[in-house]
Picture 1 (tube, rainbow, N blue to C red):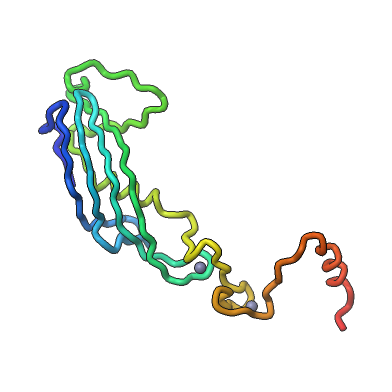
Picture 2: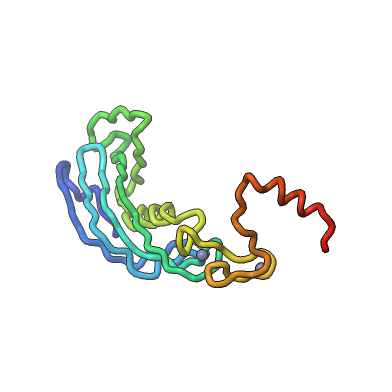
Length: 176
Ligand SMILES: [Zn+2]
Ligand SMILES: [Zn+2]
């Protein structure tokens, strides 16, 4: 979705449903269903505001046990774009920007590429380490057993920290 900001009048608000197949342009990341949701675009003389919530999903592997999973992704859009027109913002005075304002300049063509904003926000919504479930136990680093499904002899039981010095002592004793 691309919006011609020059065609919007100050005070105008557009609400639109979006449903679009979006290329993540990122290796290993696919948005596997069309990105869908509502967007609201509003314009005043100097800025364009973009609001919306959009959803899709992405196939990934669990970061601990490598099980394939399909992760729902949601992008929350709360963006502001400064409209430049011939060096002046819409013919009006440039607004004073406060440091907390997160405002992107809009290119000279005054096209707001909603798809690109959504693409970036969806990528930001990806977790650093996706997990199949919050308490995923992962794979055994020695034999590769999936500790969610099975146990193996390498598994260390949860140890009471107060007993740890004793266990260290035991490890130092020669094996019987
Ligand atoms: Zn897992
Ligand atoms: Zn093992």
